[in-house]
Length: 186
Image (cartoon, rainbow, N blue to C red; front, side, top):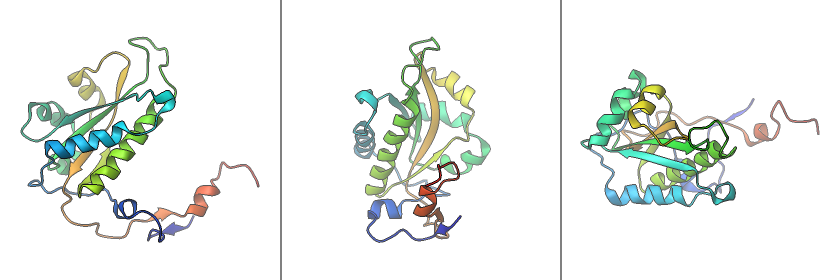
């Protein structure tokens, strides 16, 4: 498998410059205007049947909501995530109320699109975003108590990156994406 280190010319600069920081600047804040733009970007993501089955629990340092989230971070993510100006818990509606009846088979996929839009908007605002799953899922779900049918999926830390990437980001080549090992012979 070939790894490319540099994005090809022609890819949008916001996508080419995006990276997941290993540390956040604790003095960089995410104000109400920026938070509103991040959520607007997610709101405009495509979804199956325009169902928009995603939700976000947002919290910033100093807010009571932040204290509901931070205790559930794993030690590995707490080292850097607590310095972010914003923590976002992502949720999706998987089931009909408290049944096991699937609400939408595309719920997780659609949430991923909304998070991708939010991530690019963060980059456009000069902010960095790092998606992660290193937290106590059961404890966070119990602490937030989402409505029946909704599930906590992941978290995103957003804020000012503390430094640039230390090395170029390696990515699988576009050719590798077209010739995945599960693909049918051509």
